[in-house]
Image 1 (cartoon, rainbow, N blue to C red):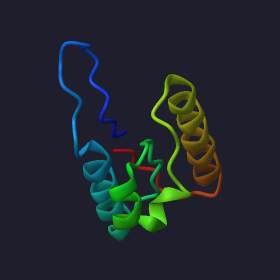
Image 2: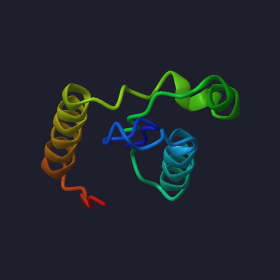
Image 3: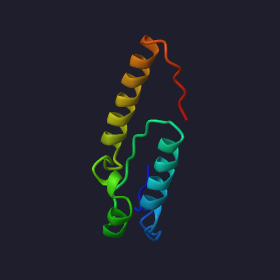
Image 4: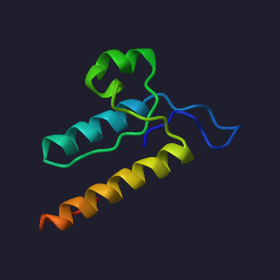
Length: 88
């Protein structure tokens, strides 16, 4: 999950959380993990990470619940086929 929005209204917005999330997601995919990416890319990051733009979901409670459900369904499917299921 990467969001540039600060929880505290008195705190300045972050600038690179979307980039950090995409870089970590890329690293995880390159090492064999399946990834659910929740972030909203700014215009610059959309150009840096075009392959992630269409795959990313908004970083919201609803989308977090949906991502968790997708992960759980994939774990159940993999386990039913005797595959190892490690979660980070």
